[in-house]
Structure formats: structure tokens, C-alpha cells
Length: 254
Image 1 (cartoon, rainbow, N blue to C red):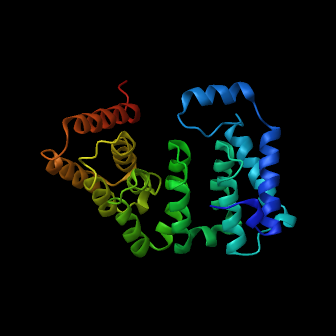
Image 2: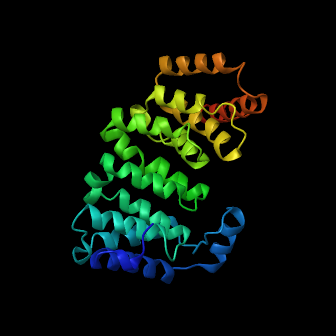
Image 3: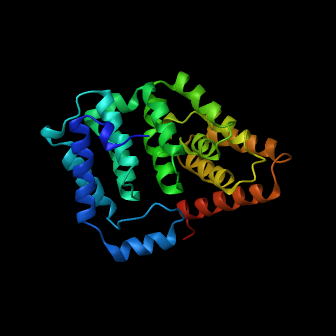
């Protein structure tokens, strides 16, 4: 996907600086704990999330490491995602996609294919979901019609990670959530047996129902009722359990 040898000097310098700083903050005990908790072959360094964000932003803010154009920015994102990869270097790639300096590049429809590549490159749930939930909504918000069609197409492709991303990508879009995109992405995967896809459905529904207006919530519940005859019992139970648990958390009994 991208190597240091193929990058511009400034992109290479940024990637090296972030990686080296992350490695200097390695916590081996925490890394082992996270490795036991999360599946996947990509190792952890055990760097706290707030430290990771600070490290990445400090280097991105360095005027000497300013990326001059889309090619350099994209190479830096890919470089952090691949090569001498750790979970933290992948999180740093996501931080780079959300940095205000490069927001226009990150939100461009040209970046949707970049996010697709990241999601499908040796994916783990935490790193692929970070791109789906934090990076992919940027072009969706900037160009909802064209990029909505692209993401809708992901819901029916062979890659389970792309289908998972299509379902989850609106989890933090809040008032910008497109309910038709949500329904179509979920509806296309009601009979999916793979956990990686099926388990995204209750999560996406819960996220939407937390913030949508009452009439939109009623519409979604009506859709769920219409799906009841098509939906496997296990999925219906998982949705009911997740929604009920979230309702209890938001409205605890006194």
C-alpha cells in the first residue's frame, strides 16, 4: 500500500518521527494486556490514547513537517498504516486524517478510496472501525449524495470489512445521519452469518437511536418490525438486548 522508500522526503520524515516517538512511549505491560484483549496479529505498544493523539498532533503541527499536497498527505497516512505497523501507528494515521490542517484533503471524495484501502488492509476491528467511524464520515458529510452511493455499494460487496464499515460509518454522524443509507446497509446484511458484519448491526442502530428525533426513531422501529420475518432470531435478540441495555443506561430507574 505504501512504503517509506516511495514517499516524498517530508512525508517520510513525518512518518518516522511519529513512529519513533510512539516507540519511545512503549508500555510493555499495557501492550500485553491489550494484546490479550484484542484479536489480531498487529501488535500494541501500550501507548495511552491521549499521549498518542498529542504525539501525532505535535509532529503534524511542526512547520518543518508540513505536507505540501494531497500526494504527500496520502502517502503519510498510508505510511503510518503499513510497514513497521503497530495498532498505535494506525491510530496515528486516523488522527492525521482528522487534523484541521488537512481537513479539506481528508473530506474530499477523492479520499473515500483511501479509507476503503485502509479498512481492508490487514484489518482488525479496532483499527478498521476507527477509519469507518472517524475518517469515512468526512467525505460523506462533504458530498453526501455521491459518497452515500459509494458507501451503499459497499454494503453488498464481498469484503465483510467493507460491509461492516457501511453499517457503522454513521455511528458518530449524529444529526447528519442518513437514515436511508443506514437502513439499506443493514437491510442488505440481515441474513449475514459472519460475526464481523452481524455484530455491527445492533451497534449502528443503538448509535442512531441515541440522537435521532422521536419521529425518526418511530420510523426505524417500524422498519425493524417489517424486517422481523426476515431477520434470524439470534440477530433480533441481539438487537433487542442492545437497545434495551442502552435505554437502561440512558434512563436509569431512580
